[in-house]
Amino acid sequence: MSAKLKFKPIAFTVFTLYAIEWLDELIYGLYGATLPLLKSDLALNYLQVGLLATTPGLVSIALEPFIGILGDTRFRRALVRGGILATTFALALVAFGQTYAVILAAFCILYVASGAYVNLAQATLMDLNPARTEQTMARWTLFGEIGVMIAPILATLAFGIGYGWREMYLAFAGAAGVYTALVWRVAFNTHGGATEAQIAPRQLARDFFNAFRHGELIRFVLLTELADLMLDKLFDITGLYFHDVVGVDFAQAAFASAVFSSAGLVGSILLIPLLERVNGMRVLRLSSFSVIALYVAFLLVPFIWAKYVLIAAVSFSTAGWFAILRGRAFSALPGQSGMVVAVTALANLSILITPTVMGVIADAFGLQTAMWLLLIGPIALLIGLPREG
Image (cartoon, rainbow, N blue to C red; front, side, top):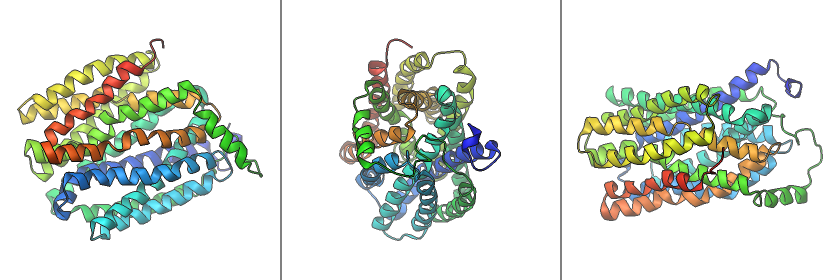
């Protein structure tokens, strides 16, 4: 397998691929941790906050299927390079943007860029060891959890000493620029179509539409998106919930995001050896039951300290969801990892409207009421998971 990689040793390639996920989740964690302050500075309502996630997602849906399809060709490397460069630019744009429209445009660029350099890096890892996609995804998720954990900690410290969200986004733009040098040294040619000089658009289109007929692939792609309600969607508004509903200050709200991500990190660490012994479907079924109970308790309990404990328990319990579900999706279509990325991009439409819907409900009835919508995630897993392993 290493013969396919132009840059030696293979350890550098694997490290860089995992580090890409670390950077992406570091940026994502920054969004969740700084959202309460960004909302306050720009005087946004909940609908506008929801559109910050929904609109970029809708824009990315129009482009990510093409990115995924082309990712199975010799253009994968160019797409990854373009993605990291666009990310650097967009982070700087957020830092200097003075209006809601500019910030929204910057987030649109970030979403599309992530679809290029992050998803195709993930696909490359899957191609390296297609027989162990769940285990590889568990390690990928662990790197991401580290990034998500560090971002709110940095935000908590920055807010405590007087820095704002703009300075943090500018610093992250610098970090993304450093990553560009690492990405430039990786070939990204482990997939089947990497060496094909000619591209057959009709065949690529046929492969794309045929992928939607693969029942097992569609099942796990859709379940991954629904599970995200209790993963990224919950993390997105954890800081906002603690500030606007629980009533803590900005630093304590950022700390809530740090608690969420830290607990998820612990769960991700324990998941790696667990998957060597326990079937992933069993892990998902058992954790879905516990998450429903924990999340309901989190919304109902009146004590601040208990809410911190319960949000940590929810994050810990959901740590394996993305790794297992996405790993199963890649296993359903071996050798066509870019096509899985393309199908996943379109399936994301089913869940993208959630932030906007929650924003409308929150503006009308309060954020506390809107939070109940996220229970659809674990309930969908209980209904949709296959009974057998």
